[in-house]
Amino acid sequence: MATIYQVSDLAGVSLATVSRVLNKNARVSDKTRDKVLAAMEELGYRPNSIAQSLASNRSNSVGILVSELDGPIYGQMMAGIESELRTAGKHAIITTGYSEEEKEKDGIEFLLSRNCDALILHAEAVSDEYLIELSKGKVPIYLVSRYVKELKSNCISIDNRLGGYLATKIVLEQGHKDVAYISGRLNKPDTVNRLIGHKKALAEENIEFDEQLSFVGDYSETGGMAGLKYFIDNKLNFSALVCANDEMASGAMKYAREHGYNLPEDLSIVGFDNVSFANYLYPKLTTIDNPTNEMGKMAAKLVLKTVYKQKTLKTHNIFEPKVIMRKSVIKHEA
Image 1 (cartoon, rainbow, N blue to C red):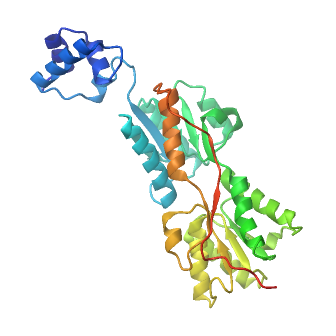
Image 2: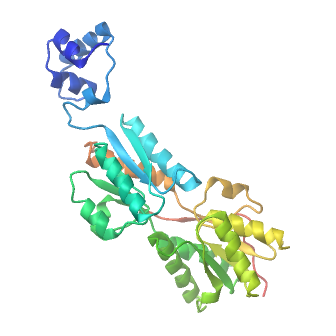
Image 3: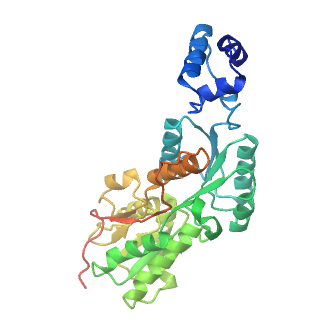
């Protein structure tokens, strides 16, 4: 198998020049590039990542930490990141943190050990202080779906307070006054901000937030089922249910039908995320669009722009949530 050293000898150029050609560096003349490419073809040389990184001092790989490998949110996010990186000739190294502090730290340490040029983190359990300290190291970090004020230029996030507000505003505008709410775990910034938005929407209508009509779920289908069961078992009055994600909304819809509810006549339900299956539930789920695929692409673009110096790329940091109206909410007749 031919080596980069043989290509260098045959073309009569330095190893660094060969590496610049492999990295498509503009500082190589057309004549020199043609000589190197001709030598590669004659020798049947296939480049490897080590050779490509000689001149640039880059591994051309970006580490990605997500909470889970399954689930529609994380899949869309990873697909967005990977597709953008692959188009630019970079590769992704992926690991998981499972929303647990020690596992997130372990995953980050693994990515750092792989000599990644940058890290894109969907980190939920580690503290802001940890991330701020991490950002002081040699490897730049970028956060997806999380906002840390001190790192704001490297954060790609959605306005979760606005999203939570819009989700509840949907049912209030349809005349619902008794609104139940299923949140995710309250140790997650996204969860807290969506709940703040929910409370703001209620306050604007002079509706007092009722702790009894609030349930802490876990962002899973079973969490939505457990939340609706809690409200029903406690004989609470409510005509609408807002869930902090679509999976809990789907669980709540399933439990409601199993217990004799006609949807949406007996109960209007709103989700959050606009995952692919939301359009196939019955009734089709009204929800808040959380563009995780586009956010993943934007995080990758930010890396390409700031780490790999692709200055022409246009980036922005904050995405605005949008209402996706479908069939799971109807007007409430008092």
